[in-house]
Image 1 (cartoon, rainbow, N blue to C red):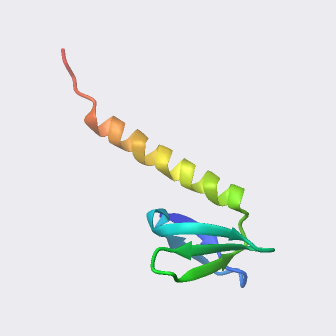
Image 2: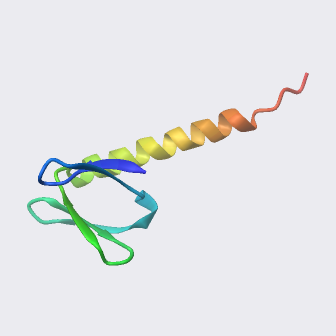
Image 3: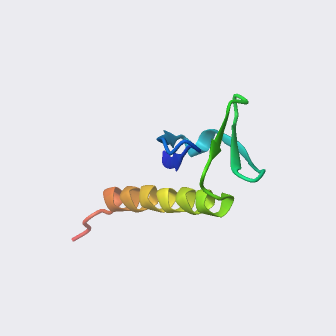
Length: 71
């Protein structure tokens, strides 16, 4: 889940796996797979960066949990 900010300043979490597209109107319009949408303050580049950072964290945690001690 990534944290985004609505136009009114309210912060919320969104499951980035459910994002279908990001439309670039003056703001960023996040269109979800169920066709709901959110208008957010973050730019598409910022949203993509947040998704990449979250994915990297998840992979790091997975990697840390799957390391075996082979002594």
